[in-house]
Length: 413
Image (cartoon, rainbow, N blue to C red; front, side, top):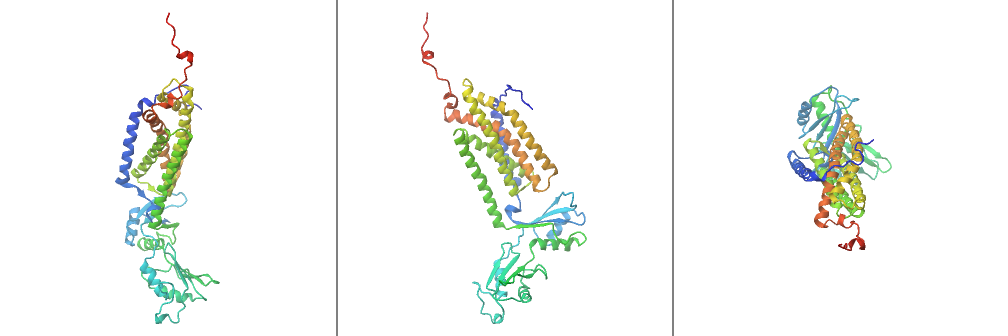
């Protein structure tokens, strides 16, 4: 299949200034959208609790949002999830997470007759009480693990924990359980924010609308979210550095800046599109950005490779003319590969759900700007760098050497 007839050439370089100007403007507008309306960070990066619920009846999202607020949660997000097999499915996100404060931890230690360092207190009421030798709080704040020297009394432990503000046992059956009989290990399961959120919905909307259990409950703390955000930024920067080194070694130093600028251009505009459409920035989005980086640099490297092949073949042409020739020769291949990949992403965007749609949208934008940047960003910048800093040596050093006979002046008769 041939979209471009062999031998046909397009003059891309004559219009490069217009397209570069448009790219700069688009990239600047994308940067503005990072602040207004702003990037919509998901639970992965900002922390919070997320649950998915299959309601028994259809309930408007505004009514669900007000019910969550009345249940004691601030700034909730309610999103309808389209799922053919599960009707009335909604996703609810809140900023609260399952964490125990230091005051709550200290209250638990005090009730269990533990001092700050894990030793028994001197309180007279603890004289005949079995004191745990070890206490651990889970990072999620939904479980407390205790270890004793001999078999503990689970009912007594339950009474010790009851009444602490902000701490509620999960249930009578699952509240205090013997996790390991040999080691005398006890786990105290507390109600998570997801459980409390579902209880609040059931109280506000009624049992006829809200089920007993959620389809999915996830949470992440703000500290872990910040770590994930920093790690995501580092991963993209490290990828750019290694790609620059690869291009400099694989081709020439003058080729590397164009490839990196094109990658920054692609990722910047893709993030701007996510900000404009207010799609969530999650771990899946970071994966999409890294995929865009790989896809774009692959297209750019293929164009660079054809430019390098054509430099010694067409010694009489300028660098700009060789770039036009090389891109024209690779244009048919680019249309086929980009088109097939875009069709796949359209399918995900149309029939996918949740994060799959956001991933497909980011890749669609990345494919479009990545193909464009290989033609109008990477190649023209390489030609400018060669002319500005290397004196046009990319063509000059490959110019054919004149023989002695050619250098000798002709005799005038």
